Length: 366
Image (cartoon, rainbow, N blue to C red; front, top):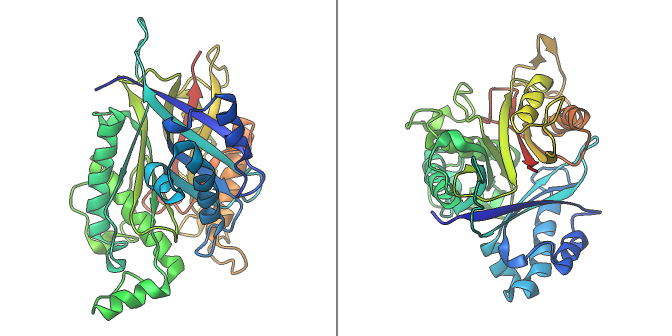
């Protein structure tokens, strides 16, 4: 496997269409646009079916990068993996995390594994395949392909798998009905959860966290089946899954390292602390190490309680439970890390234990 150098850049944004920070870094030479592999962003929409800040952000980025790459905006979207997560409730701050990858030589004396990144796409799904075994199986294949692309062979070295997956619309449901097929749900909002859950189960299958056979009826029901490193986000702008694997690779000469832990619930501060410690950023950080970003999933406990006390996130008809969860987990992580510019995504179906979710940390090494 050729040696690669992976770069990570966190860039604040003033709105979903703000590309000025990225363009400034490209202009200064800090980022080579030809090396950009993936962009993960937090946008200040509602995170729901009609959150078009995600599509707006991707369109703005593709339009800005097109002349830098000599491509059309549509071709840029095919070349770079864009994952926009809507919803910056509470103290969460809108931002982009840009990942670059380029060929490099591993310096003499460099020890240990460093941050590696890989990307893969599934085929397009039919509406009736979302939230079902077809999506699970195709996602598992894409995860393995992304691992190979990242130079990672051991599943234990995978610390975060970010997936952008589709959702259902009324038109997509009708298209399935016209072929004589039924979708997993007819609700666009519920379909987001089904798609996220099936995608996460695909990660679990690929990494051996769960068995190879998962039935359609297990999705959104068997919450004992989950992945400890999956982070999935639904959007209206695509019909396939975009898979990004982040882990540590012996073929990487990166200045960065990634680690993770798993939150048991939305107030699991110990897990966040453990994730920080895993990359040398505990209460007494290792000299020279600095925090780059934190990536986490947030979920309202499906039994309606947190550590025995009732919560009302699932019964609030004014604000969706995913928005409540993002605000709660975002506040917790911001307080422990000292920044609200963290990537917290709502809806953690089959992503960590029910009511919890994975939390990954990237640190820059000295």
